[in-house]
Length: 405
Image (cartoon, one colour):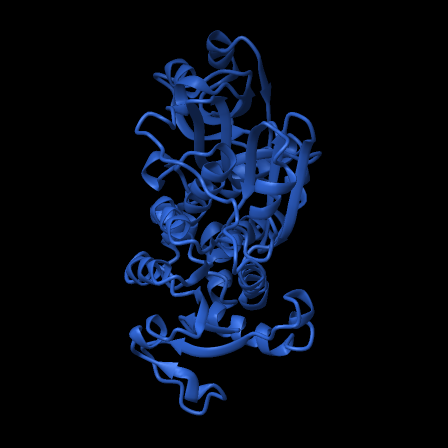
């Protein structure tokens, strides 16, 4: 069976590599048929590449080739990936993707187009790289009512926080090392400000609860305000800081979804996830907590998920996989600040007497070199709006949510 790859970057080249290096075992999984990479679309030149004869700069070479049945979209971004994918689906070709930005923005439309044209649009690689999470969420956990999801969904920020926690590095020092190692882009905004994690939250929320969630509906906060002082205070409480995407079920018509730094206590499975690794913890009413862990990005881990989807499409050429979600609504994602109760970590310029006069119950934290006019504490359970009211008049240095996962 002939396949094509659109985008020959890190993931796309990995897809070609995995297909070729597993050419002896893949046929066993699709009834004896082989996979052949027939075309590779990229605007760049790759002189000397062993696949040089397969390259094209014209999308129509793939669209009009009737023998190409499955296309891997590893281009990234919304355009022209959306236009190309829509045309391929309408032409009766299945498409698999690692493009989280496209799925978060346009997944509803593309899944609908796949259904209408009797083909598949599969997205396993769009969340968590090589971690299997899409199929488990939609198939293995289908008997559960999902109560919530919490995920470490970005390897770059997890690496930076690990360096801060374990090596005592500042945010800027850790970011520089992440860039030197190739974990962070020259412009790291999408990672450190939480936008990458936000897109993955949208996909997970759409899958788990059946209605499309858009990035604009998910309030997002990154890790640029996290300091070594915060790390030290939270360590004294027996916890670590992680950038978490969190989704909570409220009713059949509403959920809460947000991305932010969070205090995770050391007993949690998420606390031990270090470096560039990712983890997704799903809480079901029947199964309890299950955690999916592994490399969240990288050439071969992500390519592994893309090729798995290609194999799945090859096995389902005659029938559509039951997969997808419905339309969302403007008020579907509620304002979590007024609805979700949790404890909070607070660091402020104040004394204990003033804190005690406002908060009924707090747990004070300490660190080496703590100034006499600075306090840090964990509050009792309340909404963020209630916390904001209580802190009026305080000189607040930082606030971090405390998770119960």
